[in-house]
Image: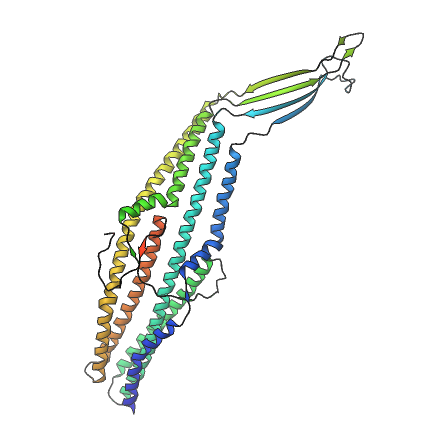
Length: 444
């Protein structure tokens, strides 16, 4: 009876993986594109970045405007002992005037260019933030996929190790096993449970992070993640670099800052020229007919032009120096970014190649061989040709290879998301061939 129970448990050993796979297929799957769209629509930090851009765009519309004209009303040369009388002194008059401040020619256009370039830099910063948010959502998505897969593998192995414990206890009770096998199986099961606790905590953290990016309550559950194939990149390194220089928002943002600094430098030089103020006044006079004086009281007008004297040259030279250093700073930051883009593209492509080769190796070689080795060990164990430790090592080796396969697949998709963020657009992709087929990589 006990031997038949041992045989039944061994049969169950093979059924557990199939049952686990069928359970996985029944769950509804989350769509990464839908999650990214939700994040781009709802994320408050992205909305704040957009509002900042719109704020500076509104400032740019103000930069070219003239100052409001000044209207003046004045009672001129009134007699102190009769302040309301205008026909006693020919110099008494009611005066109305208007004046307008006019900057030197070219200053308004340069101020507008400075403000517009600054607004453009914030617009591209907003677009850069969208790329960063998309990358973060995809990274959390594929990390969550890997954690889910590993939790499934651990759950399967915990059940198998429980069966191993039962088998060893039955074999030990009939004198066919050793107590050390029971302890070893129990230890491996405890290690699996410890790993399960850590992964469950990691899953909660990833779900909270994903809900944070989507601006949702942190306790909203995330559905299962659909299976995927590894897409291939069909662009060359040179094409990726060129695409990054043309499409990366941060490149355009720094280019806008360079234009802003150059316009500010031209404006600072223009500050050595005076600004003007034009004015016009009209005086209303009353006729005077008295024993002391007579005056027909003709109305009078005056026009004027005034301007400042730009003699504070030390201040203006400092303004030119400030804008020159700002230009140099933005230019070098752009050069550093281009250098970083080139390095990151090369490094990411190398890591993508490594991860793809690992996935192909695990799926096409290591895992099938490990499964065959485990099956052989199981058959030999049933007829007492190998000991339990050999069987257990085969089971744990397969577990570790499966875990590394899921980590490599998730890491590949995360690196792909990082590459798209660096390039500034979606990389041109085509459906992947089966992972065990070996093809030359176009970007090599």
